[in-house]
Image (cartoon, rainbow, N blue to C red; front, side, top):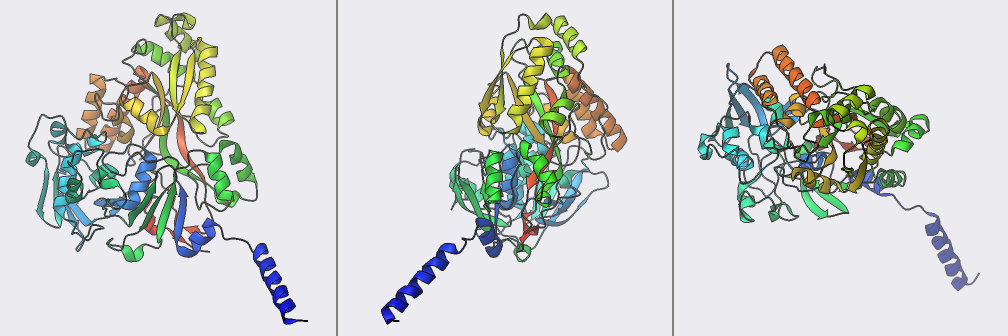
Length: 538
């Protein structure tokens, strides 16, 4: 055979082989290179840990920052983070946290105790208007400082006697304080870096952009392409960098679970944030059952009423609407049993708290209350607009509620589908009539659900307030005995359900898909993960 023909034959064989070879998927490449691909459910509002509100944002922050304590996923108990140890005084009012030696920010600057103090003063500043400032209210004078009644930051119960010691003096004993310090509002920010881009209290500062953001977590921000992806890479200056097995994580803000599921099947994601409801039965019973995970999740989905807008200022009307919801049917038929019905507000298995008060479906009582409110059969009521996040889950639920209210009460609603960030902004500004929200526990305790609704609370987006409710929450905060404390919270929850500025719908659960190559992804009832524990294995 002529040499030219031999060369042509060899070339054809090579091309044919290349055409038949399969291209590696992102999952395969990521598993080989240590890059985790994760669906995160929504575009982050901010990467400033003192600004954000959404749970999906908090999951991102756990990669970039670390508090004095971290959260053990399975037990929801505090674990050493930036602090290697801590102790409290016998009266429970003074806590001392000892930082690890040699802590650094991701830009190489030393991370000191005073950085924590400056960060918390920032988060409590009235001008900063943090919705989550109340999680720092156990600190002495914190609530008064946040309200502008105390103006000197030095009056706060915060001290840094040396570079490695943080001393926190409390307003009242708070035995779960170490768990609080693992929450995002307690994360430190580098005050020098923040100041470089404007005032410390500027909520829209450019310090959180790629190339600017400095953190103290196991990863650093490399790229943020809105609507596409957010990329973090391993932080070599993290104190426990040797234990971090991943080289990076790519978070994808995919709001549509059908798109997520298709991307997972195509090998583009190691983990999804969610799973389409219609596909849960097929995964449960099919050959890919091992890829389906259903984890306990301390979350409640609920309807929020804007009580500043008549006629929703009438508690009888709100209570009637609450009693006219068949949550069992929603859970069983629409959600395929993937999430439990919620006829109380605090989820089961929240630190041993078992809610006594309930709002079961009682249509006759609901009709009686509606008439007592002055609207028999819905007569005289306007068509209420209900704002809901445009995902797969929430519209299905509110469509069922829409049908129930019309059928049982004659109450009509229209449904407005909005992006998550729009629903949050509208409800914060009381620019809505009725809305739907989900709340995830900041830590495993019933108070993280019930103190949402104190008068003027940063996340109480209802306009509702009740002095009796406020007194119960305040008394619980001062009560050391666990049994007595829970009794006060039981009374508060009963009052909340009776007055009905909100009404619960379903409890949360994590139904998601995970590739077998992902190891160390532990069930986490609070939903925050220590990414340094996660590894990828072929």
